[in-house]
Image (cartoon, rainbow, N blue to C red):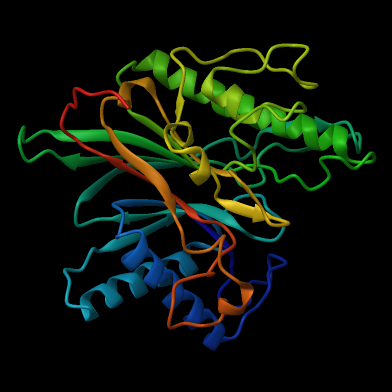
Length: 325
């Protein structure tokens, strides 16, 4: 769930964030709470991007919990998890976890110190401005009385800014390729160590579900990179068995999470490991932002347009399903 510049009303001198008024921040929290509760139907785990810090995300969790109880429903007891990254504007990735149902085993930030040679500037730079955050957690299976464990990784990859700028594009394209390879290698490392690990990659990948001819980000992460000659910046195939991009399972007319100049495109993905394919029950996008006008932005009587991205939502059964998607 991309929160689009979710900055709080407290000045943090260590970053270059926008400082909003308390009134504006409270309105944003109210809108997001409406979206999470009424449109997303209060998922057990929510991967979040573009949050300023842990304190802001904790306030959002408290707001959702309070609003849920005020509506006469049980407190979901959402808890916030976030670790600061390298982004100059101070936007980070985190999780909201429904602790009434989910037990957190571990959270770990990945690749914060990794560097790459930026050929556009001849400098060494951080590979991950917003490092992936991994969550290992479990849910109790009421039938077997055994914990159902899974691993989720929230991601916010390099944007398209500078992608076609002659002065910057070499560095930008290299960074996007290396970020994709970083995730592909991470998946393969974990699959090799434990072939049964149930891995979920989620977030704003700033990449389409297909090869754009420049960098095949999603193909590389899935384990199906475009071959040389079909992409300008090719990658090796690092993943076996392949990941599954859930957007490929829905109808073509629903394959968008963002609109750019009126054109629908998929930037937000959920990819699952082969070990989870028998557990997936459904996937879609919570239609609450991309199709709605900017004039709704500060209307806190409705959820729509709290962000510019629709949230990807996946449904899983913890029973061993027999029908593959």
